[in-house]
Amino acid sequence: MTPTNSSSSHSQVILHIYDISKPNAILDSLGMGQYHSAIMYRNTEWTFADEIGIVDVEPKKYPGGVLKQEIVLGETNLNFNQFQQILKELANEFTPHSYDLLKSNCNHFSDALAKALLDGKGIPSWVNRGAKIGRFFSKFLSSDSKQKMKASQKEQANRKELHQKTRGLTDVDSRENVVEMVSCGNVHVDKAESLNHKANHTLAHVLRGASHFQSGVESDCVLYIPFKSPIRITELRFTCKDESAAPHIVHLFKNKHGNVDLDNAEQMKSDQIVTLEKYDMQKKPKAFVCAVPVKRVKWKGVQDLTIYVESCKGAELTRIDKVEVLGRIEGKVDLHKLQS
Image (cartoon, rainbow, N blue to C red; front, side, top):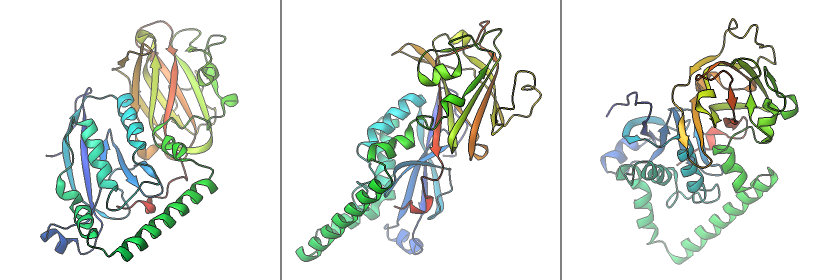
């Protein structure tokens, strides 16, 4: 099945399978091929890696192998909030310390994520056959070999724990770095600015969770978000209690260092222009949420993000109750550590 453009309410769940072993042509013929796999959802590829845990990577760019096959497993109508919740639940099982080549590898994760998104439909069984065969033959190891293997695994776990401590990270921290907004602790809130806002309803108030943002006169406004460390953005998300006041046409600028204002915003060349037609209804708390997928190739090395809201959905003034930037602080993930 060839990947296609899904409707706005449905997203394709696509399995990417990579060859990671040079003799795979021979192993394939014996039904014993070794593969790395990942799930692509909304133009982002998700996988599971040793010492890292769940991680998002650029689609089809796995450095340890060659893309062998792309399979559309199905479609899901889950929104990004629901998808993020699934990742959080899986992160409790697929932690950086839990990686095991035979029992908990990238293919196990792909299968679990696919089943969660597609009501129990997993990945083809042949993708992870190598691990199943390995588990079978491990039963015949001598007791001495098993003890040595356990000792090696314990030593490896101790090294991983020490590695995490020296980096100042816990399992929870590293998982949140994958699925949570990067702006937590990485935004210069004191330097964040907004143009055309009401008093006590500025961008800084939103980032601190003190109140919502509201434009002062008319609906157009500028939001400037500087980051402490460069980030790679994968998605921008607006939450609004009043859908009619939610952003509609949005211009996104990368690394403009505060040089975008209401006078020049429409004339300046933006890095991306997005028209936000559909907001998903969120029940608790009641609000409207819109996930804005960004063009990944353009949003690396972002030191600051400027958002120009040209218009809202119909009201006279723009209102934003929450703005989130999702992605990854750059420099924390070595793609060459990804392995099956």
